[in-house]
Image (tube, rainbow over all chains, first blue to last red; front, side, top):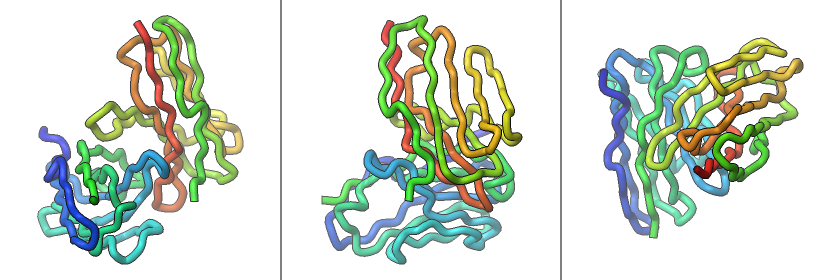
Length: 114
Length: 109
């Protein structure tokens, strides 16, 4: 069974641009969560999608948004990029709602904002 | 807001030594998980503890959940080079995960 895949793996953008990251969950998984990982703040929860609906949201500005498609694939968008958005963005999928099921992480997308 | 503090932040030990990593919080969690993350990869779940005072053993790894469900520890016996990685605890409350600050472990051969 294939694991969680994230594309692209690496991305370089400049301040003010926007970026879209993609996540394909494990087949059959209906929940996708997104996290931001930085050396200073560690791993922080962004949002969770289940059955195409955002079920939970972390404490991030509105520049961070996401969506989930009917095939459970998810995208995350960051608009008006700032230097501080440089981070590893991780996606995790689980069978059902994340809190009650094991979540499996993808390898992440490394975003660098110049 | 960082709800979970891990200590130590960095740990470098010789192969064969024992070590303990701590995960502390002032918040109560319904469950607590431990993950290991290797460079270039996402975290991988090691264990979930649910009951206060619970102890789980996975080969050389022993996990304990505090009686009050606010803290946890991970003890590794006879560390091996394959144990090298970033260890993360994560507390679950409501429907949200809160990850700890992480402990970077290096096991030297």
